Length: 466
Image (cartoon, rainbow, N blue to C red; front, side, top):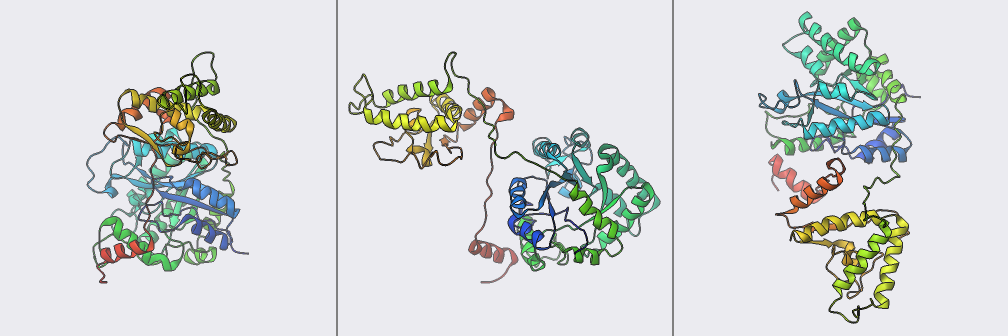
């Protein structure tokens, strides 16, 4: 049986153009190494948290959700005086111990982007004090405030530096209590060894526990070269450039327990403490429930009744010039059968409010003469056509509703609406004003490079010839 150790400081490919570890491979490797838990601590974001959580559950290992935060030297609102990202923030390792802690991590990461962004998304001590519950805090890598204080100058840390580091630990210990640990690392770098020696001395003097981590940026040792290419792309440099950011050596992979104990032979207690910390983590996320906003129909009407009323009215307007669909009195039997079938599925799956909300902001766009239209599978829905989301009649073109929404599938329907790019901001603002800004989010997507384009880009960046 291997000695107890869990990786509490790991970067995935969501540490953009820095980490080179696909989440599934990262989790699979931890499982292969016999570890019963694994942490994800990407730089400044929680982009990969849910993907990582699900991957760990599938592998039957305990997910430790965290992130390596960027902490402003002063207030997060102060955005001047730093010419480089390194000067604008310190690193800090934060791990959620439970769902409350994860919720606090979300608040921290959101505030970092919305309020503290300066070179990097930054938090500050004020935010940490307000959102510390359920969070385990590690002092951080060599770019942390704690380590930089000990490393400033040359040679061993002075008494003045140690005193400053003790002040830093006192503040964090006050905020996080027994969930604060002094972090040490050794990926083969001299600067890490210097920081470790001073950190051990500080821990001894103040009686705070040490925990050993490995700053893992790629899964396997042979991935070091690929990760170096990512850094070149990130920084706009060639691999042949001598004065560029790079991670020296090839020890930033997901090392085994045995390799960790070999790297830190005199820190068995700190290595074992990583397992103790992981064993306290229990994050149970409720991913099976939807939390849609609600729509308020006119008084005395249910959402189902109002949606049907809008559909009937919309179809009569749509088919005003088509007597085979509406003769001025009644909609044709074929139209009514299709409408009834679609509404039956919408009602059964509980999506009435969802359709009404989309109808509401599309209605606003129509009234403001803002061009809009649905695309994709939503065009196959007569309900979408009736509500003026789509402008293609699915009956005329024999389009399948089931491709858009099927009662045998439980996913929410995906109604893609394109708005005029010049005025789409007006629609977004309307939704924020009506449903609350806290309930509205704009989502991003992550682009990836396939092998062929990656190789071409890498050759260009490294200066290699075809």
